[in-house]
Length: 456
Ligand code: FCB
Image (tube, rainbow, N blue to C red; front, side):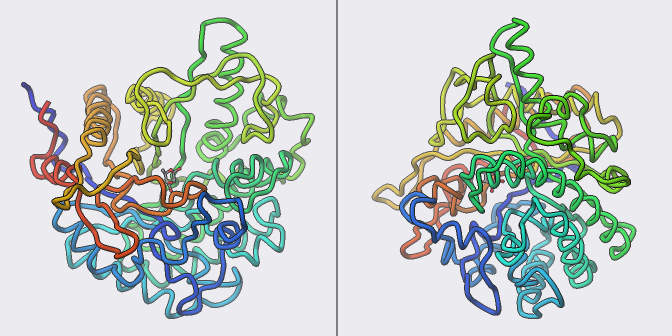
């Protein structure tokens, strides 16, 4: 069997997000984010779960960094909780909040793990939502200010900065389908939110460039959709075009080309005239970035038809039907299909030449449990990860400039609207005792990192 060897400088990481692991929701000056409010609203999150305690990472950070050191990861992608650092979304930073991230990054650096910091992984301060949230233009300016506070505090020790995680989810799950915080179902507002997230990204890039050393790398993470028409029919291909516009080009075009997709503007005329996009905005959104992060879990198969409302695809409900893709499924009921990742990577190689790529999230939930001897066997997760890393390897061989891979997730955690019922970690967390147990997949990943590739 041939080994699949990765480049010597390939970055091997794990990823988490603040609200999903930190807990300590009311400590050291932190105030509620939209996710605190949403999860405390009956019926929004399965089982009434909240992030109040989560994986208690705020108090167990050193233990978690030690776990990563044992795995041998080179990089760790985490997010900063905006309401910990700037509780009202305005004004000066809270020292204690910043101190937590100082301690975390110091701990990482002394373990020889590179910190990769995301500024926004969905925990908008509730006060900013009360003032209008992402559909409100001012929120973009608030975000730029917050980015500056974090850059001033951590710019000397964090080499890689990501502005937003998955603005598609923030805009459309948050404001159109309402299955994520803040739970609004207003299709027109969700399009405004998407633009203001792009604007927030661009303004933050400007602020970060001014505040950070020239060596700092500035990036953005998108959950791009591997969209496939069910058949070659004109109707199915048209459905795929619409979903590609809303799911991919609405973010790629403003950021990399300084334009809005013309077909999308046309598709959404019944909802908006896009007059909230002001002169000069698209220059801001396209402030150059150093790399692009992509999160990928599963492909999206579409056909001509209709979908349920409220839908996270504003304007597409009467034109598109979502078709379950065939094949094995994860515990999220997401189809397992590494080809989707390969397709996205090669597409970006062709469409964004010269832009280095990072897979900033990939992984799978399964119904893991500790057996009587305390071990957690997760062969399906190992197979999922192996298949997706093989797809990354194939993309590298085909000339895609992909620099690293961040496994989602280090720890079992609060999986948004699914609460603690969905386990994505390679380290099992017993939420009652907070005991951490590396699963078989953690050992497997450590072996992949140590040998610099897959067994083939
Ligand atoms: C992504 C999120 C991440 C995690 C995974 C499963 O959309 O960025 O926080 O929930 O899905």
